[in-house]
Length: 389
Ligand SMILES: NC(=O)c1ccc[n+]([C@@H]2O[C@H](COP(=O)([O-])OP(=O)(O)OC[C@H]3O[C@@H](n4cnc5c(N)ncnc54)[C@H](O)[C@@H]3O)[C@@H](O)[C@H]2O)c1
Image 1 (cartoon, rainbow, N blue to C red):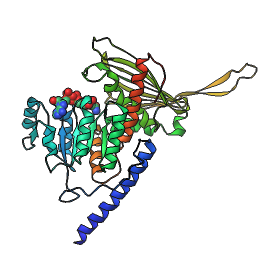
Image 2 (cartoon, rainbow, N blue to C red):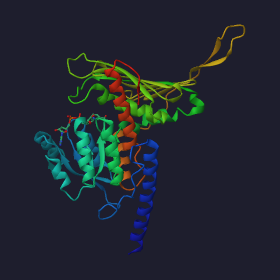
Image 3 (cartoon, rainbow, N blue to C red):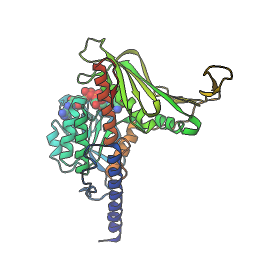
Image 4 (cartoon, protein in one colour):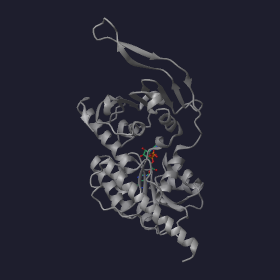
């Protein structure tokens, strides 16, 4: 073995072991059923010519969102768009117009039959995800699936277990975890300057697009739940929600959900397909700061209000009244480096496939989001009763 080849193999084994350890820790921390029981083996060395070769990716689904993946994967230096699969012949014609050298196919079985595919990106409707993820993992492929990973908790647990036992990366497309504005928000939420965490509030409204297979909660709220869990580094303990149908569909198109976290922190999420005002906003309020992330404001994506209120000493001679300490300071508009969230997300996936750390939006993280969505659904069925997550 030449010395350079030896160095590559040594590095690979070490990084694989590191990732195996990290994945074990993560599975344990997430409480993913069975994951902790599953004996973890390091990823086998991928059957590529060399470990530094690009990760060969198949894209399944080239509808509204899929073309963004095609473009991003095509631009990433460590990845290669190797095939695009969509069951619509019209969509495949579009693929061939844009990417003349990229093969296309109409059936996923054709993707799995190829021996030159390391990983699969799934950008099909939510109701198809679970079966496609399972088939991809069973065929030995790493998977990046759009949110939500599946439509029930048991299916997600099973997929996480399968990925762990097959030593494959399973990641969910939570683009906002890779949004520089959300990352900046977290930076400004350091415990000392932010103070005590009071609450979070998110609004995600627009006129559609209306999905045929899931309600507005499963379509839109995964993003906000993911952002909350990421900002707080935890999952909610309970959920309470009210949904309603105004567009004559058979699914809730508007919902208001409240999530209860530890230490009485609450997060509120409003999603709607029936609001002519498009809003993509998350607000975090602490005792010393209020932080606003507005994804539609290219000039001021994040604003930090150095203002807050907390409770001071008891007021003398009063019965249980306390002074309110109001702080007032600057309004800061921090610089948010421009970067494309989807590109950052795909780069994290590719790095994980190549033997790096597990991705931020891992399947275990995704499982926490699904548990919350399931609790929200159950609460909506009982008109807002609090449901344990
Ligand atoms: N992260 C984001 O910001 C974001 C934005 C939009 C959509 N999404 C997600 O992306 C996914 C796709 O959404 P969309 O709006 O592109 O949907 P879409 O309906 O526009 O496109 C889906 C495509 O998948 C194809 N397809 C369906 N089943 C297939 C199968 N079994 N095999 C091959 N092709 C199949 C369809 O022909 C269609 O072209 C959804 O999960 C959605 O939630 C995420």
